[in-house]
Image 1: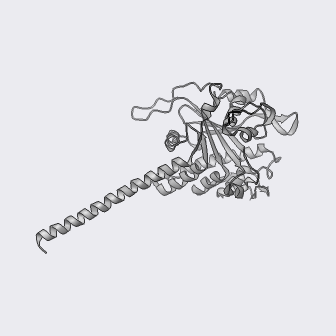
Image 2: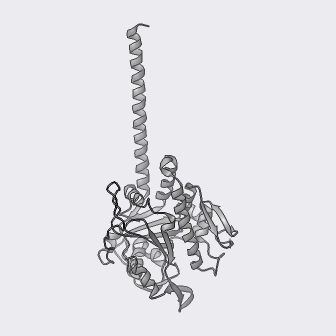
Image 3: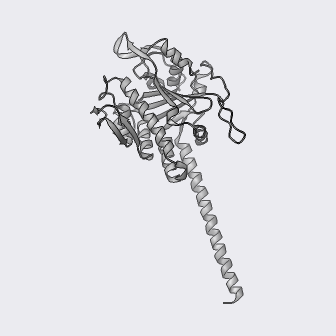
Length: 345
């Protein structure tokens, strides 16, 4: 082979290698672009701000971060945030029915938590609102231009049933006087898939649970739960305490901390495949307000919470007492409930 022929052969090899590398890069970018598009389009958004207008509690006052950042550090987010998080007891869809969603139509907010993030995003307070709380449900706008009627002595979780996220937010703001800056809803199947995508969660129960309705049977002690078991734990109430929703709330708060610990202990950024699996599980079953209905906005919120550890999350329940009209229902205990909500404004 002459020197000219050898040079030509090397040139062809390099050209082929270059084209192969370029093709791989284009394919990688295209794949990443599709993954972003797919995750972004998984998220469903509801324009709550436009629906409710200006007749709402004021936003929390912007306050400086409790610890000033160094010159090299990124500035901490200014102002606190309140996010209404609902676990939807969806009655439609094969996956939800298999996980205990039932056969009837519609959905209920069987889990409701107000998540308060402090100005520096280093601490959080999670306040659970019992679904059986009797409230005055305000008139709520409907998508067809009509509105629901005011309902007195109505169960709290009925707001979501009759008026969806918009009515759930308006009802929470009405009974708390706290502005909900954002809204997040995740359904049955989404929660179970998230737990499975994370490889399960570790919880320790202080008492045995034997509940045929949620199909959960656990001895007291430490357990590693998969998604279906974790969901059953979040839903169970007949196998613990007096069988009321109040006992279930304690288990839900236990799960919140277990999830935070699992997420913080799993370095998702070093495992793109697992990160995508987790993100896909979350976004497929997620409905948010239009301020969080994109992957970019959710990612920015997530980044701001990177310094939040499970031991800095305080979980409490809205103070309640038995309703005089019904021993199976509760009402807010005053002035305790008002004092709690005042700390979040």
